[in-house]
Length: 145
Image (tube, rainbow, N blue to C red; front, side, top):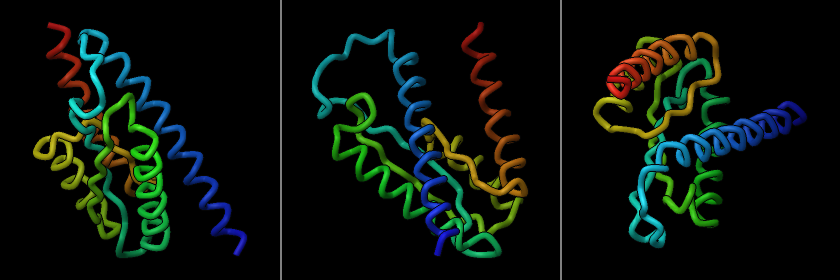
């Protein structure tokens, strides 16, 4: 029973750290707007992630899914991130690196996720990081012009 408690604490810490990063990113990117109206007029923030809901890493993936959904519920109950409701899209990668690449490309390009949470296994994190870096760099180079 102890390993599950340790996983839950690690998941809680990861979700808390992600929330702080998201809040910092959101506040710096929204500094040019003067929208100080209520949260009802603010568009929701879509966060995407690819989790191993099936396959070799499914036990951990399902635990992450429960943790992320709990985090979204609590964040939205307390007013969201900087007044924006959080919407979470979780897609299954079946513990497969190729599927991870496809999933993050879809989340970033087609779904237009404002943020993505990375997977937890090195086997899956490396391809996810490559996709995220590729699109981040392209966005940075466009904004620098």
